[in-house]
Image 1 (cartoon, helix red, strand yellow):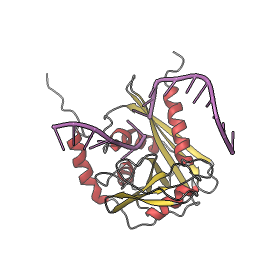
Image 2 (image 1 turned 180 degrees about the horizontal axis):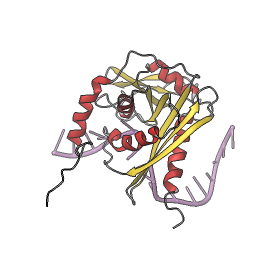
Image 3 (image 1 turned 90 degrees about the horizontal axis):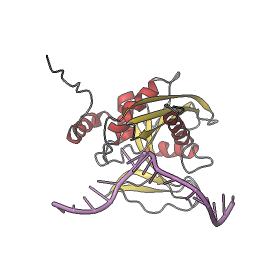
Image 4 (image 1 turned 60 degrees about the vertical axis):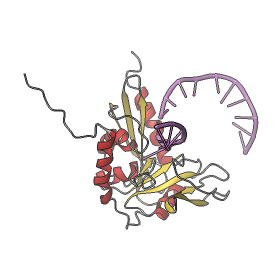
Length: 231
DNA sequence: GCGACAG
DNA sequence: ATCTTGTCGC
């Protein structure tokens, strides 16, 4: 009897994951502006977990950038294959997200991630990682400042303050609703920070979070709940 | 060494 | 992320 080697197609340790980040980081493209807001398509991706059953569900929801109407959507389910480690979120989320993106019937256009891009301890967060793997323009919109610091943006919607790692601006705290806690925008791949913020504002006509993330969040939760619901 | 820490 | 009721307010 022979022992089959485990396929080494994904990191199995934190140190291995960090080495992958270092190897891929140089492929991030930062000198493109990205698609203009309000044109083409914008896709939100998100993931939900069921630790009990070791399941993960991902959703991708494609919106018309001008009307914010849903154009297409897809889901994918998988096993949880990596623990949550701050700084290594991509390894936990990306496999299933990729499957959902591949199941879409149309091109995603700009992809909006739930988390960070360049605003990352190693400057290679989820949005950068997904961008490099797919070649798609990506941005990250997070709900928390993570380890970074920022001044309070002005009260009106649209106000911003630099998101700082020491002296370096790694992203922006962006107020999407008057007097409401800002969101934290950073560049993923092939999009400028100014444009990423403009997209985020275009995607938040009514709520703090982008319609893309709201739609994707609702869909992946539903997909997870619909796995063996009546049994 | 200890604590903090996207989702 | 996820566990969870009512409640205050536009």
